[in-house]
Length: 570
Image (tube, rainbow, N blue to C red; front, side, top):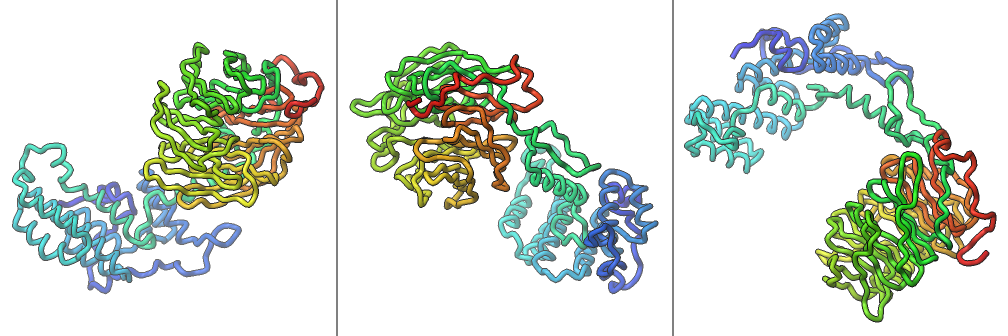
């Protein structure tokens, strides 16, 4: 198959492949390009080699389809995208000169024998498949036996190739979809695979310039302390920078429907609802609108204060857990109680859902954890030191692991399928924890006024520590939040809401407004600009961006009544 120079340029996505060089094999040895290793650099920092820079730009031009521009750059700069030996090699591949291309490959001067064998394997595999397509079975068999097999590169693939020979339907004109996959790959595709395998100094990887630019933009974004918006477009024309106004720091609304301390709150997965629980023995489902948050249902069937709530995976149902009492399952749309989960002589202390919504989990005050069907049938119970009387409970996104505080300074990571236990061990008493959306990280609140971030993939590893909030007597909860969960928020006993940048650990906001301890915070997973906080002052505050504060018909949100509440006292 003969191709024109223009066709070769288009297929190879590379430089203007020169006419075949006539001469000895020594002329084809890959040599360093003329300016490589020299001192000529571009840029103010003196770290960008001019030759590499020009070659990468040329590669990008060809990839974008600007063939003439790429060729002109090579000509004007005197810096070829590929050496002459590489151009010859690419022509040989595209024209199907397999034996010659293997010889040329050995002239690259590569020192890694494994790379040479792997590249030779790909070339000879292509030769084998094309021979089969041409129904030259004996020639294909000879290639397999005398050229491919001796490389000892991929024995399983060799066996697979040999099966094609004995398959009577391989050369048939009528093929099944599976047999179609056995057809020889296009030669330009082979070039792409070889490009990935060979050193970048020989053949520049596809999309290298794009990769470098994307990497620079991502590094700028990650280094931006306040980056918290999908709408914040990044431009190549200027360095990226976000202002503090991207952090929800303005109290837009105060919710005052609870009549006692608000202990817990959580946004639904879709961000359309907020659920709160209180010492007043009620839970409230709030509906989130563009203009504010409104009360949807007040759930008042419990006989004791409510310690926590948990949203079903589809947000259609809600669990409420009384403090050492029962768990109730509610329909979010109607506010109807669908089921009550209880165990004679025992009280529930925590609740959670399986990711598929088919089961619920509960921690009990006898330190066990139970799994229930929705109709209340108990499926399994893990007895022993599995949880504490005051405890959080989380189930990972794959449904395999149950997470609970099992001892004062230990968190249990229980693989319920493999029945394997792992532990996070702290030096200080643990008061609460929160699981990241991707189930890879755990945020642990400690008695000593520190919040620890743990990576729980494999063996748990402590990643970061956050300090600044106040906690001396009560359970204070923290959460992940913001765009890509790039921030950490926490309540505090000094009536403030604290926000840290997750990566740098720098405290970036402490929000005043509450008149009592802030027990819990929740960041809207669908809106990085919405944060909620629950306090002993009996209120819930909805925080947003400064420029959205006009959406609520008051410039300054009202305090509840000016009295400072703290866990039952005034």
